[in-house]
Length: 440
Image (cartoon, rainbow, N blue to C red; front, side, top):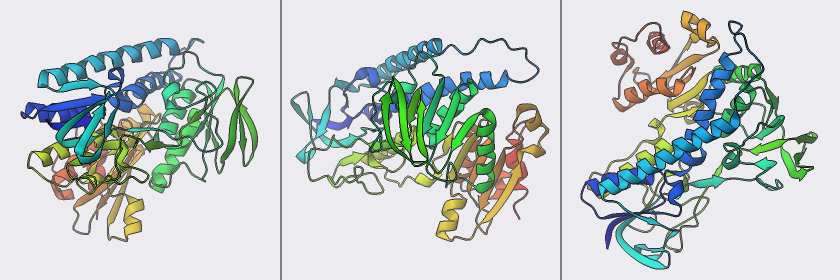
């Protein structure tokens, strides 16, 4: 009998390590130990950031201060470097688990009635079970995915050669990041999306700047366009849309991810689009929890980690609600990145809450003109008493800067408290001081 069985070796492993260090008997079930660490490490944010950091150099080398030859990023080398980093991370995670006393079990795990877990034809029992089975790429109807000319994020990070051109369907984080990567590397890149704008969640001022930045990078927008059918034709992707027929060397389908729910083999646990849970991530089977992508609440690696640590705290007797609004979100586009945390304009307007909004353009900082960040900006939201309730940023390394606002939210700071902090000059963190001083 185990204290906790964790099914899924993504960010679930962080909870397993903590629980084992606290003296609990813990097992971590992962169907492929060469995929431990989950989608983020293997097919998502870690590989994509490696590519994007290289592409950022490509973009910067276009500055007229450089003399540039015809050589370009060697994709095969980039993939090899990525594979080496991922392999080292696998071994590091396994070492952490073993050092903490986590029993690693390789195999496909399923949750049965009465908290029983089936793995490799064996049935295990535990006082608690935590499901963290992640998600998989969603392929819309009519698109014939084949892994060669029509690909997902699983394949795009393992290409050995650049295509002459690529179409990307979907303008979420994956689509925008990969559009930035290919365009920065000089590849003819078309971004296909179904609406007038790439997002309906970003502040209009920042959204306009983000769209301009992507187009200036070389991304061609095919807006108000829906793919009705996509098939392979002469080893290329033939796409039928509501606007006509198009052909590309590659079609990257980046239309979101669907929660992996096949782990559930009991009617006691409710499953709809995702595995249903309450606000403490407990399923309808007492003692069984679901964290991360598989519960459909927030598909971010750091959200999954926060959830599993929250559940382990609950099991250990420290029960507290995790505020998902205060988990930062970001999109690593080039040359600027977008990040948000807390309440933003879209959800504030929908909720009809009273709030204050202050905006500071990065163009007011001399540093922005040296780094191509003139189109960036920061929007800060406070309540009527000037307590900070959220922010949106479009800036270099916005994913790092947003941590300042995340800390302010965790500390329940008002603008006068945070404004006492002195930010170094010249940095983009100064923009936080400036926007705080614009709150009326």
